[in-house]
Length: 440
Image 1 (cartoon, rainbow, N blue to C red):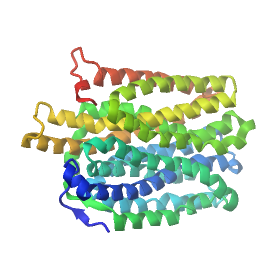
Image 2: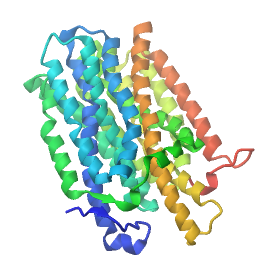
Image 3: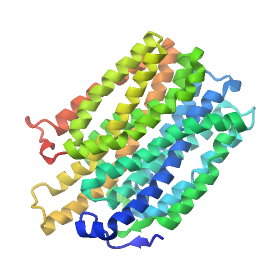
Image 4: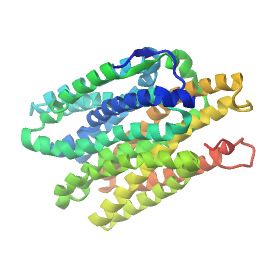
């Protein structure tokens, strides 16, 4: 059972790690993944519910608004959620954030159970699903402290993938549940799992004293240029993942109405994107996050162009395969960019200090604390990409009848992100100091 508060925690000490630290970290990671997974399911449940709302006669653009709002609210909530573990303890905040998922679950059931529910009420209730989006920031900020630097890429990748895969599970399971029990079951189905996640966190997770920090002090990280550079890159990776994943079912239904039954395959997109995320972290641990991120943004731009071609040719096979490739590249980018964050702030904090000295160790602790705070802000800003992508598709379809204009804009943004990655983290000449030597 959890010790509630652990006062001594030195994961970078090999002896400490092998003698028990690894076991504690793994236990916290497992229950963190469970709670975060449910956060993603509630955050993205409307991506399937909207496809089943034919009786309400809403336009495609109106439905994209319903799908977009949880992304918008969830992104904003990630900022306060980032500081929850440092203020209240990782275990304590995981219990709280899990229980908050009862709000969107119950309200969804209320909304779809009444055929007279107005459109504006659907918008309000869908927005509460954003509570699930905040869970990611608190979970990642908490798990960052449990693992040594050498394992953070893999650990954070697993934690994030376990959450991300919630998008796939909701798109796989919900059509079956809705078909058997009706739309209201899309909310009620999750209640027992939410309670189990809260109880699991209560009994089996830990709070770390070394992770305690004043939120006001942590907010100073927002003044660092690296925080905002990485936030832009994360819009391109995670923002794209959540945006493409939640848009997939509605995009299939609106652009290939004759293939509407194939909406059932939409879960494969976020499944692939989630499962491949740890690979992005693994590659980044070995060859550097910036290198992986640079190549990956080029691949994302190419994949977006292929999706565009699939729509232009009205070829479902080309569209589907290209879309799967696009979501897979977002997963790789998720893992590699997240690996960059702790490396960047560690390099900045310890620059010019000799490893093993007291000054170096003190600076390393500061770097970890900065990285934890930055992770939340970066994940919050990055998640807004999910809103922009859904609104991009909705606006493009409303204005032109197709999604081509939106995809062209997305591809151009990925090209810009590739340039930013090279300029800030890989080039070794010019007036701007590079972090390339730090193996970011």
